[in-house]
Image (cartoon, helix red, strand yellow):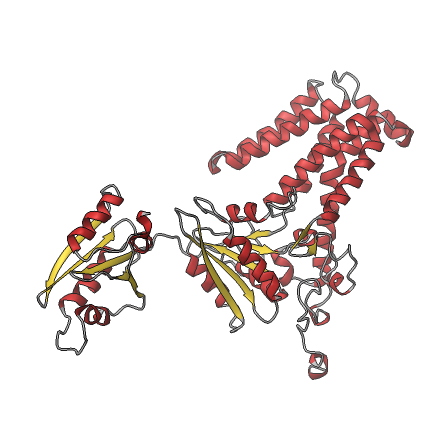
Amino acid sequence: MGEFMKLDNSIEKIFEKINEMNGKSSDIVTRVIEKNHNRIGYVYLESVSSDDKISNFLNKAIVNMDKKKPFNSFYNLLKNNIFNSKVKSCETYEDIFYHLASGFTAIFIDDSDKAIVVETRMILDRGVTESTSETIVRGPKDSFTENHNKNIGLIRKRIKDHNLWFEEVKLGRRTKTKVSVAYLKDIVPNYKVKKILDDLKQIDIDAVIDTGYIRELLEKNQKSLFPKVISTERPDLTCTSLLNGKIVILVENSPFVIILPAVLTDFFHSPEDNYQKPFNVSFSRIVRAICFFLALFTPALYIALMTFNQEIIPDQLLISVATQRDGVPFPTAIEVLIFVLTFEILREADIHAPSFSGGAMNIVGALILGDAAVAAGIVSPIVVIVVAITSICELVFYDVDVIDAIREWRLLFILAATFMGLIGFVAMFIIFVAKLSSMECLGTPYLTPFSPLNIRSLKDSLIRVSRKNLKERPQYLTKNLKRLDDNYEESNS
């Protein structure tokens, strides 16, 4: 009701209403100036507006206003004497409150039911810094910040193409957060952009604070432990994805952006892959794929073989493992679960501990605790090795959602192997593959390009070919495939 109220035509009434609706907040500043026999009032929030800009710029513009300029009303005279690139008109209190909270100053004139809002925003965000979650040796070091316009600028400075479009919506009944959808108009199919915009416009929630809100709400129709979008704070990875035909969602006040659609092989890639030789990149991606399966399957396979299917293990190895387990009071499954839980506790402690003590806690926990547990006969050395390999293999992945998905699926594999051995392991593996095969994002199957098989897109999946052979964009993303001119080799020969 009140948010659609029209402005009053009296400065005092406007000030009174603004104070009343904001509970007379301490950061509301109001002032009235008389000029050319007219009263001018302005209001701003000193917590988000720069007092220097208002004093040195706005006040001077009002005081030095030339009344001889031929304008048909004092309102237009005032509006055209304010030399600011962001000057707008507002007619409702809802618009006024939004602009005040965004760092604008609202200017009112007696007997006028329209206000002029001028940007006087205070700089409240950090500058462009190096990425902390996706560190690389080679490549650009800048990362996104909480400033929405600055994030768009980091993309604009890399892609100077008129086909780069940004479509904006405001989400959150109370936060009114700006959310921009970025894409290359001539590469991305229109129906994908329309679907994303329609899904965003259907979101009705009190607040959107971070991209995590958007990610969760966009995935509501198809629940999955594995992420179907990429979350990154790297502008170079974002621009590479845009050029391949993906869509990017930027959320105001968040240093992370969402890239979609994502397929499973995207999480075996690194932002640094674009700056290294193809052979080294291919080797690294294969290592990440091996780590993925080791992190998922190792504890469950150990439990299945030691508990139900010992005949598969060679005699010498079985004797060695059985000797190590001599005196351990717990069954193999309980032993593994205890140590997996211990490592998860250590991981959480390392993430949330202060930086000055986190490293020390990690060393004490991983080394001394593990050695003490073996010496006390609570766990066997082979379990420490199995769980340590599993935990180390997780660390090769950047995306936290992927790590969490691996942890949760690993627990399901452990439970299946605990109750049914290799039969349970194989059954869970079938469920795992079936689940991944059933997932899709924007019509793109999650196991692309392996299922369904797409030969062209295999060139930049687990194996990376040289850039001169990457002449086409991924076929599952766009029909505009041409990336490198066919005459390139001839002109450089």
